[in-house]
Image (cartoon, rainbow, N blue to C red; front, side):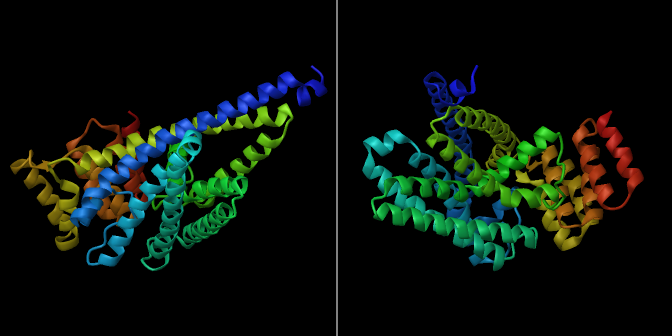
Length: 382
């Protein structure tokens, strides 16, 4: 096959255009599924607790950093607004990308677009508040990444609005797409982290406090990488040659598959279990013991666990994930000895589970007890 045919022949050009269009639709379909599952999680978990004022229910989500803080009403309300605004972004943003709505329901597209841009601005401001006023940050590195993300949201939203006001539709769509990607950084963060963990069969480069080399990279890449892919896609779309279109289509398919892996992982390991726990009528033993540790110490909490398990096994939720999540909460707070005690209780309750030994081994490792860490890691593999 000659280079001339490859780069400019009508058959190859047609194939390149078709492949690029199909790859873009494939990405969009997977993204819609993932974002609407995210919307379900945000609305189902944060909606009822926010509107009833039961902010303490957020402690069921052990991945949160300063979600619920006792006595911090302003901070709790800001966090609730931030979470629910993210739901509007995820749902409304995908609606904006549907070409049939743009063509046949222009009024819906315009008003939804205005709501999306205003919501994006609210999301960025609330994010900056939580990082710099409330102190809900993993590290200064992550705070800078989130701050840059917020600035980009504000700038891109303003440029999209200005182009729309000037009736420059082509420019407006470009800036709107960029705004959509940076505004969904929360979603890309979660999906990317879980895709990384699944592909590497473990949290390579991710520390106990969600720090580490990969997290430092991904804190910026979660929105800069999608932006770069968008620019390459737009360039390939405008290029009449087949080679860049086919190359971009192939890359987009690979990235979409990775995104789908991440969506499945985060949905099954985080979003859906958290929603299920929120609607479980049983009392969370993790929340109960956490309060006891704060008021009476770890020894009292251990006694309370055994007493409640004997006296009220149906009233409290004694699922394996309860103590496992509490153990990791304590690890992230560098309270390693308390984490060891909690995870030892989980080993007693679920001696056949490999995961409980793996978690206990991690707690021992963080506490500096290598022999016990190795022993428990070996049990998790046996």
